[in-house]
Length: 452
Image 1 (tube, one colour):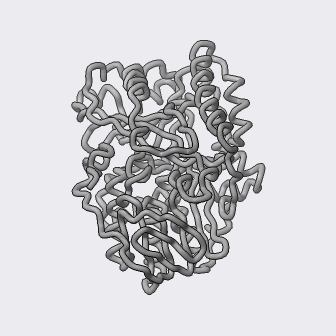
Image 2 (cartoon, rainbow, N blue to C red; image 1 turned 30 degrees about the vertical axis):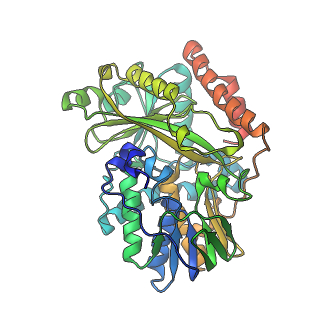
Image 3 (cartoon, rainbow, N blue to C red; image 1 turned 90 degrees about the horizontal axis):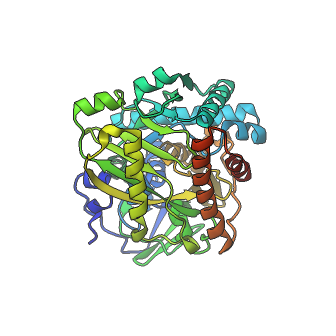
């Protein structure tokens, strides 16, 4: 049996992880859900609440919370992969505002369910601060707040003092603060949700890999599930399903965790309200202060692997971990010499147009393409899929991401070249902005090309 506690810091501190029995028979259910991450578990949860008589089964290739749901940065945020401005151009301002209002509500909904189901996910809503550490980042911060005002997103522009009061990093020129974000312990949340759906009568089959997923049927080595509705909730792992290799690109994000820091160190760093944090660079970094006083820090930069390969060996990259540790000390010199206790990573799902989507067509439902913003977006997906599956009138089913179909990625080697060239280009753009203080034209071209 795999040592699931070794996957990440989150899994090691999530309590005992003992796999549930797998599927060992053919069966008929009302709803079969493929994937035991946040999307699948939230969908099962809200379906069971809406109609306790439904027969619902979840099949998971490993254990609940094995993938990105259990090893992410622990941001439960109102971020959405597509900007409000882009949604407004494509669907109208009212639709864009509705999508982002639903995201803000999802943050609070996760907290509500944690309290109601007594899930010890360490939920704390302290907001998010994005620092501006050069002139180009400060210009983007001002533009972001202008757009926030236009769409009612509730972001606030901070000057140097205001930003440093929340997070005393080096070279701070200002920043953007939003109250619409919480920290969570993601593996505890996923494991707690699995227990909550079981209490409501949902069957959860772990170590049950789906070999075929389609309308009306899910095939596994241990048996076949027939269902009125099949939900594909596999995010990055969709690329491993037959016919799914070009639908989602699995891109790796890696993380590190420090030993617990003393209160004196936290006074020097900040994050007194357990805000999540990032800065305005293009190649994303992200972090949080954990409930036990560690600093968990992650970022992009790991390569995309040819033919959308997913392999546990890719979860760890010495060069990426070295860069993360270097960046962490650059941000917070007080952490020089602090011990890094955990290093881990995993794939997230990237749609070709960088757009998350959710839908139901001819008995096959899906949700995903969260581009790393999945903790709260998956909650919204679960509630939306429940309304679609039960044919319940809901404003959620009219949101602009419902029914969206992203185009397929290019065949290899074009896909490998495009994704990795994009990663390198964003790294170059960040270096150029640090040197010159001027916004990178290369980054602007890439942002337009991907439709952000």
